[in-house]
Amino acid sequence: MAERPARQAPKAQGAHVVRTERITPHMVRVVLGGAGLAGFGLSGFTDHYVKLCFAPEGADYAHPFDMARIREEQPRELWPTTRTYTVRSWDPVARELAIDFVVHGDEGLAGPWAMRAVPGEQVTFLGPGGGYGPDTSADWHLLAGDESALPAVAAALEQMPAGAVVHAFVEVADAAEEQKIVTPDGVEVTWLHRGERPVGEALTAAVKELEFPAGEVQAFVHGEAGFVKEIRRHLRLERKIPLDRLSISGYWRLGQNDDAWRSVKREWNAQVEREQESAA
Image (cartoon, rainbow, N blue to C red; front, top):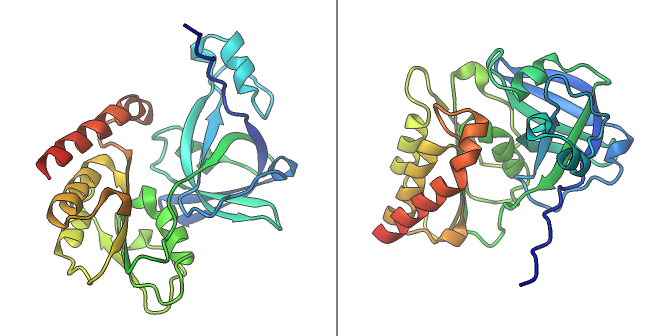
């Protein structure tokens, strides 16, 4: 039997921090630029993402990291750690890539880095990837997410076709976390303030209580995995929306750090799909 070829690490790209901006109390925007972005480009999706690479403490790798060489020559504990973030915007003329980070003090890896980032700091990333964009054939659009999905929701709203019918729900901690977003004429974002309620409770209720317009919907639901599962169940079992009209993803999981969630995410999603499809 022929041996399966070894999986190659994707080629890393380099950039540097141009500037940072505090968008809200818990959202920081980091703008990247530099000659390393000369070959960067997007393919029309509004949920494009990149994987930022962070070298472990004690590893002094030159940017951009040679991921293939590192994985070949170094023990696993010295491999860079990756964190996935949505591309908020890309300006090919200025060659500037903007990424928004949810920050909670010193919690996590990428958030604290974004708060400390300074102009000129070197960055290595992989990507971009992506898979969702507003379909002009849909009769209307449903967008629902928490803070982690806000950059993708905002990008989708900015690229909606003129005259699009859109119901957009974004759950944030409070009014201070709302952002100004460019929307098509007649479209407004419904901001849901979480307060002391569990993540996703207000968002799930809003989607379930929505009076769906007539016609075919294209839905984008991303954020914390628990509420994403609940909304997915509602859309599939009660609203009877076909899978090919849904873009659904649990970006993170309450009670688990990013590495722990990524280690079980694929099987968790598969189990959710099996459960809900068997109940359909």
